[in-house]
Length: 447
Image 1 (cartoon, helix red, strand yellow):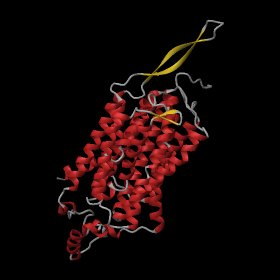
Image 2 (tube, helix red, strand yellow):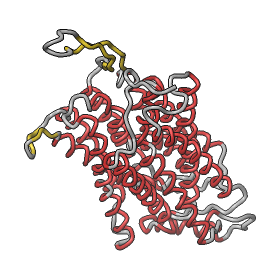
Image 3 (cartoon, rainbow, N blue to C red):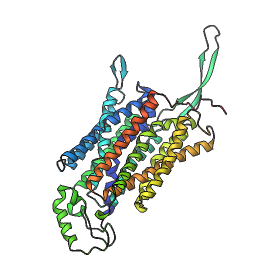
Image 4 (cartoon, rainbow, N blue to C red):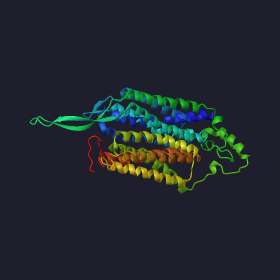
């Protein structure tokens, strides 16, 4: 039964960010079709941040009307909207309308907003629902959340997204000379399967998540509040019975059993943190999500593409792999020391700083055109994502042991970080033009 729960928790986590992650890895194909072209990512950034209205409303309801929100109803609605939006996207993603005298991807933007609403809201609904299970399943859920980025990335690589070759092209020099000028340009190869099929695949993944949630939600309540020992030689403590009013009956039963036991060690709820420590814990969550969801993704193409298309795709794919790998490591090696997590955050920030510096130097970063430069940028993205993913998982585990409300605010902190990171990078990339794109086929850098 424990193995089944791990599988269900992982499958449930797949639906958390699969839609938005799928959109990002599919962008190299989408931008070649939609009229916005390479301006499309900046539009998506704004749309995703507008979708933070969803988690804001959920958080306010928890704060102003505690106990009134039915989490299972909210999650059913979220996943159903996700499935429907992916299906609609497969049919209408390339449909355009004329707005303000120009062709616009109206259908794509509207559907993307609902997909973003689904994924953003999952941060403050999925995690609190996982509170009903023992702590070890939280880590499994994070593995599923990591796979929601890894699986679409692998499928996109199989599809051939962004694979390109350098070709010669000629242009007539002028009417009088009759000569021609030759130049190199990048030509994208046709994919192995269409974008429509990819979006149907995303819909299938959302269906898997929905099926897993149905199974988890129908588990016997007595099993979900099982009396397995979460800390050796301690009294069993079920925090959901203390913070979740709907768990009152079972919580009282376990509490009654616990009162007669002899406590030989500290229980989970006796783990106290000072105000400064709690502030630091939430800062970790905000910074990690600002870096991994806002600051660095906005400039990944600028930091990787100058090294070539292969470096870009390896960075994207291996960075996606690093997330679930870090979650798996966290399952067997849990270090809750705030000092250790702070050092790990600083290390991950160092790798991120290197990536940002290479993006700022685009189209001529360090060691461009060398195998060493390609290896370094790929490894830098790998370790950046891996270290900060481990920190994020451990913060979730620490806050899970505090209370149901702490997990809700954990999700809110994650969204706040993502919002701040995206808003900080949008004007730098799209308004002030601090980052310049580079074509590996045509860009010539000084030696």
